[in-house]
Length: 142
Image (tube, rainbow, N blue to C red; front, side, top):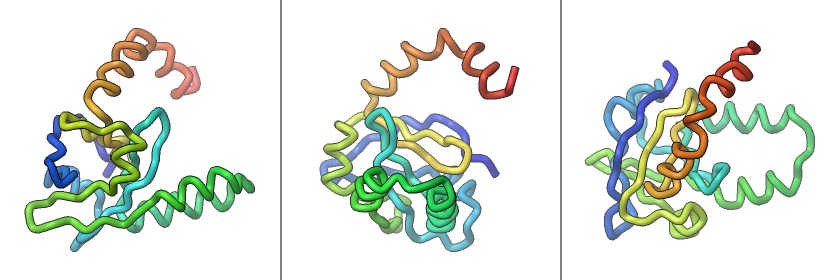
């Protein structure tokens, strides 16, 4: 199932963020015990299930040689365990990369989730929401 939704989340003092049960279920993997967190675009973080990460890695492999991107992406990516309360700990280097503070948003984005600092996401929405129809037309081939 496609991952969807916007979830306001609080990053605690140990840099843990709760992943809602609905989102964990929508990753579609039985016995999900870990996720993979990696740098995304526009100072976001991407979060994949282990199988989703492998599918993304296979896609990267077939799309040509982008060695510098691959080094940056894979060297920062990290598998993180889900704790008993459904939280993951965001590694320090990724917290810094995304500029995460206390208030964040966790987004479902088709085959992965994204984690954004609240201020960055609010700015993204302010900038891009007015162009939604144009973006939709491009995405849908219209």
